[in-house]
Length: 363
Image (cartoon, rainbow, N blue to C red; front, side):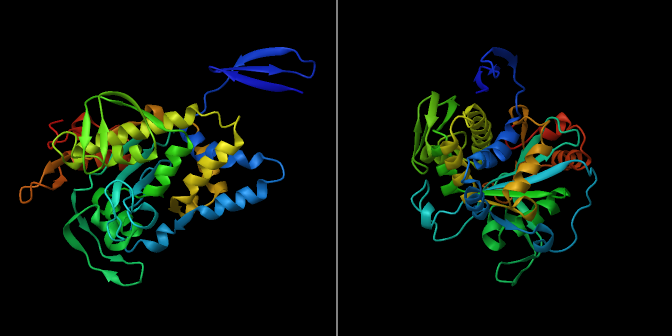
């Protein structure tokens, strides 16, 4: 039968006569693999496609952004660009209670938050991390039980999720940035752990030893392949690095995100349908999206639209912040840098170097 084998970017093909021919394969962008191949490739298994589709499709939870977000939303200036709010939820009860940090009594917070900007030309993407300790203005929000949460000033960013859920986080981000959020993705801690274990671990390069009793992380300098539990500790640790604040952790989170995507890209998903399903199942079970991405079909269509984007070249930026003058344990958006950064994102223009400097880190 005709077939193909892949080796280091080359494809060896055999025709009906058994003759071999070689040609270079086109590299697929990592984002397409993560959101497309990762979720739908396994559906090709004969006789099980419909069951697998139903199983994976039913795993995904969703929210309707337009219906859930209160009040006026920002105008979309660059209509061809896309802005995605990505959250890692810090729920440590139920299945998560044994994870790094322990049970927090059923509460949840947005432990990791990034606004990923996909430019209109589908070239280099930008991920803006928002420190969880940032003091923000929270708009009036509707809680899950239908009651109103009044607007408030100087609330910690990661408490917004706890108070009123993802729709309120979206409203808060839109208020602070003026950026209209097109899509929302959230993955919880237990799902994150299962995803890393499903792909066989993620390799990171540790520049300095990390010893954090609170997160349970103990790593020497050098290269380490982390399992799911260690990966959770890695993205959550802060007491073992830098000044012990959330700012040092953001660098580790960004580093890990790139390592995770690279690991997924290196997987032989075509050669292992069972492994592909395990990865897709663990990912979708922990995934919450907006209604525009709440099915495998929608995710695959979105992935195909991102063909020109390679997360390996994604620029990662931390929202410029300064230590708060009243509470030095908290940070506030640094001006004029933050305004310049969000303006560039809204207008889909190049981000000036001055907008990337954060007084709190000396950068």
